[in-house]
Amino acid sequence: MFPTYDVIVVGAGHAGCEAAVAAANLGCKVLLATMNMQTIAQMSCNPAMGGVAKGQIVREVDALCGYSGIVTDHTMVQFRMLNKSKGPAMWSPRAQSDRMQFARKWRQMLEAHPHIDFWQEMVSGLLVKGGRVCGVRTGMGLEIPARAVVLTNGTFLNGIIHIGEKQFGGGRAGESAARGLTEQLVELGFEAGRMKTGTPPRVDGRTLDYSRMEIQSGDEPAGKFSYTATPPLTEQMPCHITYTNQKVHDILRTGFEKSPMFAGRIQGAGPRYCPSIEDKIDRFAEKTGHQLFIEPEGRDTCEIYINGFSSSLPEDVQYKALREIPGLENAKMFRPGYAIEYDYFPPTQLQLTLETNLVKNLFFAGQINGTTGYEEAAGQGLMAGLNAALAVRDAEPLVLKRSEAYIGVLIDDLVNKGTQEPYRMFTSRAEYRILLRQDNADLRLTPIAHRLGLPGADARMHRVRDKQQAAAAIETFFRNASAGPDEVNGYLASVDSAPVLQKVKLYNILLRPQVNIGSLAAALPELQRFLAPYDPEHVELAEINIKYDGYIRKEEEMVQKMARLEDVRLHENFDYRSITALSAEARDKLARHKPRTIGQATRISGVSPADVSVLLIHLGR
Image 1 (cartoon, rainbow, N blue to C red):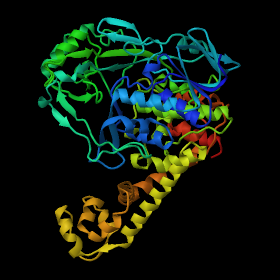
Image 2: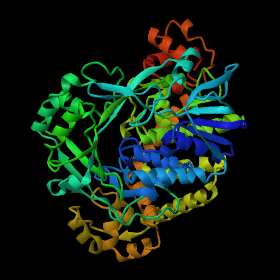
Image 3: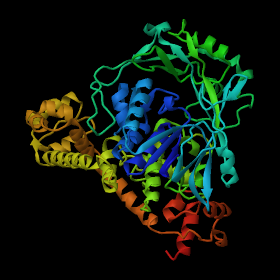
Image 4: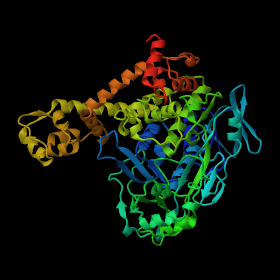
């Protein structure tokens, strides 16, 4: 009934969709298996893509020919660049999406790919022979052969939904949990754990009083995620902001005794940086209010997402508390918030390719690795799909360095440090974040896509070269062109910057923190004429390169220093336990993780600089 597939992807969430596309783009015959074809690429929680550090990941996925950025651009209803008041390393794109259109567009693009087939059924087990995966077994007992398998099961592995004292099996509201896979993986020797996440109630937007809330509009003109020619967003929908208050908190506290979190019915760790509303008012009891974002689910629905009000309290408590929030006094609830507990597998059991250590050609991506967030899932799915395809080809795997991509930071953190709580990406996790900006993801990663021969990479490389050449030409102009006191002192006074006493290079003027290219060009007609033919994207890149040149060079030097440690290889069968000069914890962690380089060893939790020195001495370095 079934051919032998090159790659089977289990699960059609954000990780699964990107994994299927990545493998298919490398010419593999792919089967995407999902329990429900109607929920492919469903936004299970908030209807948005991007955010702090997450927006950088979406740009990186796009630069590597993934689809998340393209789908977002086609279906977003609002776009905002976050952290513009800070330096460019912190700028992070975020888009409010139309939930239904997002899933529909993803499915259209997947079905349009000639190398992707679909199968709707629960996958209950793996076919493993001689330590190598060779297919999957479905709930109906069908066996589908494959040369590689990517598991992207999300929150479905033995998922349990909690609302107050009620609990029932499910991987998402209205959908069944997946059974069988965890038990088989544990039998194969994998360590499993439990994690928890949650979602807020959804309400009827027709019953809200938006006049009592703060309006939050999108950027004008709206930006986008993809480096391809996706359509511009011309008609944006507003979001709104409101706040909880002491009365809301008092009502919520009446449900604490029935809370599955406080009563101990939930054993899994929840997301530290996206806590439930009951967790917030318990941990921050001194705060009298918490910010809530009122977000539309799409253009053609009145359903509203209450961002910041995730809860697993009894539904009547949630409802009473909601109606004490300004603007929500008459709110009708579509469904209550809930918590969901599910199985995950500590990612220290993986290689940096996301292939498992125990079973050859078996890859994990997404929440199964202990992460949270669509973007983190998409980045892992992309890498797992690419590496599964490369493994099938017997080609060199692809591992992104921490200095190359946030995706590299994400995977390196997971594999070397592990996680005991849902892992979320932040700019603070990246030590080279001024190199890993959202504006230069194409410069960093499109050459890799081109080298792999991914579809469309030739055109993308032409665009990258044009961008580099344009930015270089603008920088050269600033280094050579000058302006005198009579030309710029009026402008400098307007931005509270000291006047110049003689002709000064435009480069030096731009280095001033109060000065930016846009306002400087408005004051200098010659500069304005020169910049007119250039794309704003090219001008922005040139400005960042000029203003942050010293910081960029400093980080590049740090990368080179660390690269020397990355070049020091460690044998897979290195006997760490015999080196008594290592700390006991380091011996244990190194023996368990088996790092491939000294650089990787430095990032393992519990391995100190002194332990690294011992290793270098032992290696004759």
